[in-house]
Length: 333
Image (cartoon, rainbow, N blue to C red; front, top):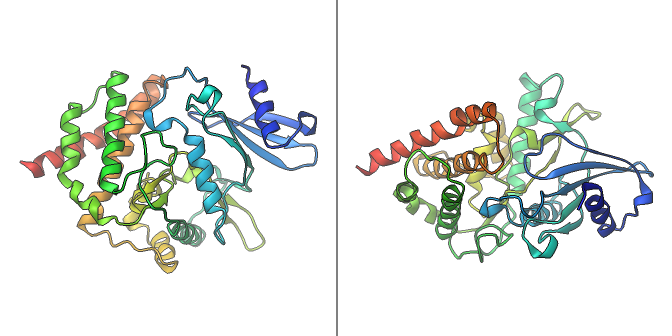
C-alpha cells in the first residue's frame, strides 16, 4: 500500500475528505514512523503518523505504540496549562491487527523544537523556559492509573507492581537483542541479573504515573508570544508507559545533568513535583537510563543505522551502559 493511500485512509478516519487537503509533505527527524504535515484548504494544519510496513522488524515494545501516544495526548490534553496535540483519529492495531499501528492523526502544535531555535535560549530566557517546562512536567505527573506497564499491551497485560512491569520491559528488550543478534556489553542473562541488584528500590513506586519517557529537547516545542518565547507543546509520546515519574528525568537530562538544572527543578517543585535526588532515587534513574541505552543500542540493528550513527551510539549509549553494568557488578561482588 502506497504512502499516499495510507495517508488518505488516515485522514478519512478523522472525517477529512482528500478534497479538503491543500498540501502535504513529509517531515524530517522521525526514526520510526513516517510523519506528514497536512495543510487543509481552510488553513489549519495536521500531523499524521504512519508506521512502517507491518513486515518491518520491530522491538517488542513498539507494537501499538501509536495507541500509547494517543492515550498520553488524550489524558494530558485535559490538564490546564499543558499543550499536547489533539488526537483526531487513531488505529493502534494496524492492518489485520498486526500491532504495527495503522495511523495517528493529530492537530499540529505551534512552535518549533528547542534545538532548532534561532537563537538558542540562553541566560534568563533559558531559565524561564526551563522553569515553565518543569511546571508542565509536574502537572503531567499528576496523571495516575491503576496498574503498570505499556498501555498498548505490547508486553502483555499491565502489572500490579512497578518492579514486575519494569522487569518485563527489561526482559523484552534483552530478548530483542537476541532476536536481532545485537552485541551487548555483557551476556543478556548477566545484564538481567545486574538489573536485579537495585530492583528492590522499585518497590518504592506505589502509584502508576503516566510517564512520557522521551522528553528530550527535540520533543519540546517553543513558540514566540507577546511576552516572549514560551514552551508551546510537548510532543511524541510514543514511548509512554504507566510507571515511575522519575523515568522522565532520563530524557529531560539527556545531554546534561538534570540534577544541576536548577531552573527546571524550581519550576517542577513549585508546581508540586517531588524529587530529592537522594541515593535511592539516583539508582532508580540509573536503571531507567540503562534501559533507554539498551533500547537505543538494540534498535540500531533493525533500523539499519549507518556507521556514523553507530559510532555515535557506541559513545552515547553502549559505553555508558557498560560503565553502569560494571558499577552494578562491583557493588554485587
